[in-house]
Image (cartoon, rainbow, N blue to C red):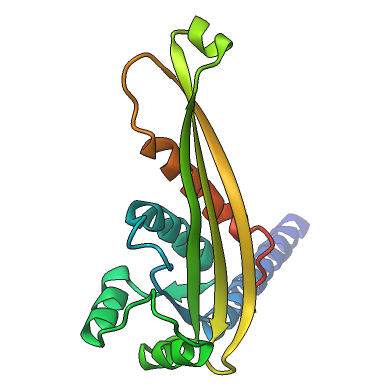
Length: 197
């Protein structure tokens, strides 16, 4: 009889703990949805000259913002809006202009940026030559700013520059490869100190 009572008590305790854990999990998901916001990523200034760099940076940044619980507007939706309204991102736009456009697109925040330095170098090093290859360096510099649509204020901004290095063994290698690698890495570096506003 004691064994049966002990088993029943154990089952009761396990069931209670599972119910509490499930309730806490549901509470967390409700809080997460409540804080859910939408971000529009506008093409960066100079992205028309370095579209391949922007695409790699945008993909990485989108993933980072999603990890923080943001919904990110689809790239083709943003492009359609800009094209339809005849907006050139390289024109001088005020923060108020950008916030207004973000509001029209149903966003809580707009991310803008500028691609600065984009450079690739090929260097022959003795150690690389022994291995039968060359070393390529790709450098990308960029700045980003996250604007709160409601307050029309910048809530996060950063600038960084990053160089990636790759050794290739023989044959022709496209310098853009290391530039693309630098762009992806740079996107992560720009958001190293990011905290959700």
